Length: 396
Image (tube, rainbow, N blue to C red):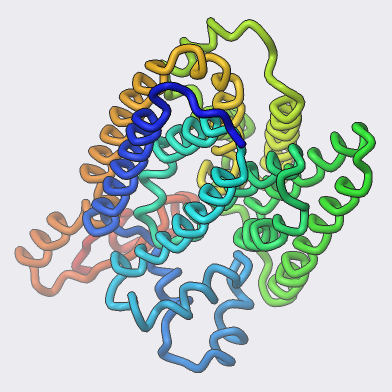
């Protein structure tokens, strides 16, 4: 059992209140934030306008994402399918899964300070707040990656067997072709560390879980490539890719200034599990950078599953400091509230597609015969409609 410290109950309440605030901000954005192109695609992939058989053959197989999230959304569409904003609520399913994982870890004696710190750092991350309010698989990836880290630490400490990782690893790995790399790397790097520690049976189990999770992902990729040929539409330069990678891996840790300053009081390097996370993070950075060199198609949201790794490293480092100074958790929570509020304000102000609504309405009111053209701003000059010369509205 984990030994209780003076004031632990009150500090747990503080952490839970902050996490609740972050979730509330995310739910607020679900109904208020503007939609964008990919959310419209998610809505199309989850529609019940055709049979499931046709949906698989005519839509999911030609998507550049594995069909797992679309299938999940399709199942819940009858309940939440009135609008894109309502379909964003299915992200709460990922939070429910995370709550069950955290509850299990808490009851089985995983360090409570780590669990509180880790949850606060992840929940207050701008990626958590903003992508919860988006009908795509990215938020669920982030949450599942955090769950996988918690479960890997439980396996590392012998609190659960590796078989308990199977559903988390399968779900995380099969949500996104690029994002899946984070889950596979975590499993393999921890497996290597355990093998070096003479825990070869557990290491082999983690390797088998990684392979088993990658099989349906590979089948989805082969099926997709047989139908379409993916193209690089973003043209991300090596420098832009490197900046994006650094922004993602540091998003949850570096933005919590209080936590970073508190590292001054850490007088020893974190345990072997933290070193494993460092190795996994370094591997993720290298793999994603090389991927972008080849594809020029790497955006921050593609790597969102890496966000919890930085948060977990910081939480592990701060465990002993929080034990000695219980007030530190309150300061970290205050920092988290500021971060969550700032991300929420940004999400409310940035309306994305809907930012053009007033311009379009004014143009149509001035000239009812105007036609609306959907232009891809990433296409080379000269390939858009020549009549409208790059404008949103024209009367050609």
